[in-house]
Length: 179
Ligand SMILES: [Mg+2]
Image (cartoon, rainbow, N blue to C red):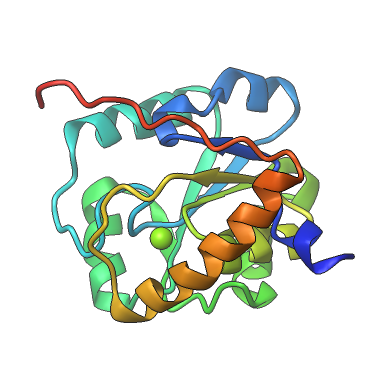
């Protein structure tokens, strides 16, 4: 597979709220693996926003299983996942395939029936694509990030520009209402 192809998301949406859950379900997907930081909440953000609680409920109502797949450390992910009431794998070392495979095995779901949602090309999307999952890229929620991520973002911007030249469309950020 060409390296650019491995970084190409199947979908690119502004945020998780824009994911068409019904369409995913109709297409046979039943497990949603999702990144945590800057995908579900701002980086290292401890709270569980109401909008996310509603989204998780909508996901479950449609019969999806959910599992957080985060490269962040155990305690951070554990605390958040417990609050959200979802399964998780911390220190996942995405884009390595091992954590993805472990999650699939845990839920007894083949790669063709699983989705990976995340805000980073090199970890979330590349890892998901390597494992044959349906990959959905979201815009990062906040600018504040781990220093390592900030460095990777520079490289990511270069790759994104290449993908855009080949036809990837960057979604418009939705204007937030009063929360
Ligand atoms: Mg992230």
